[in-house]
Length: 210
Image 1 (tube, helix red, strand yellow):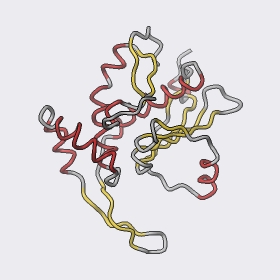
Image 2 (cartoon, rainbow, N blue to C red):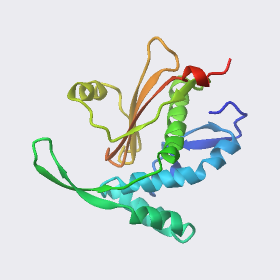
Image 3 (cartoon, rainbow, N blue to C red):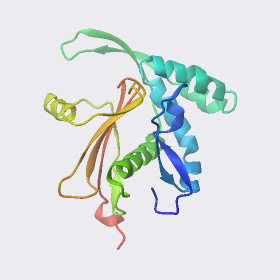
Image 4 (spheres, one colour):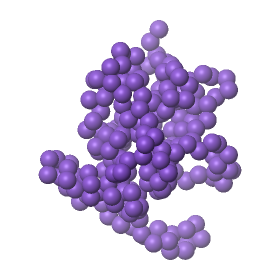
């Protein structure tokens, strides 16, 4: 994914988001050892965040008991600090109807962006058979953004891809007809309770290297 010789394969999305028994169609892409190893702590942080924001889906509860609670023995500060920041808030519809409570929590955007970047680059490679162009970047993600009805209709017309039955991870995307590395991505975790929206586009002019 970075252009260095690929000597391993990296899971897209991180293996740790899937509880056991895991699907048989997990996605892997070629990766160098440095990229695979250096992102492991970010992968763990990502797993905690998406599980906490999943509104108690069965799969996220399984991950909590299988992976997150046991890991507290090894990295208690990370897990305890994050879990203690979670609170439940009331949610109302646009018309004022009470919809119940959902978890709300702060998170480190830069760490989540590292994992979203990896997922998008990996999926881009899987579907196009080539790496994202070096003068393109994965844009900052939007987490559970409000989506207008017209855009919802456009998204539902895109092919939906799933890993396993889709209860942990599913996604759809759109590739530009004119720019080879321009694309839009919709990444959904734990029965679609955690949605990440991003795109790939050219680097800002000042960041380009010729």
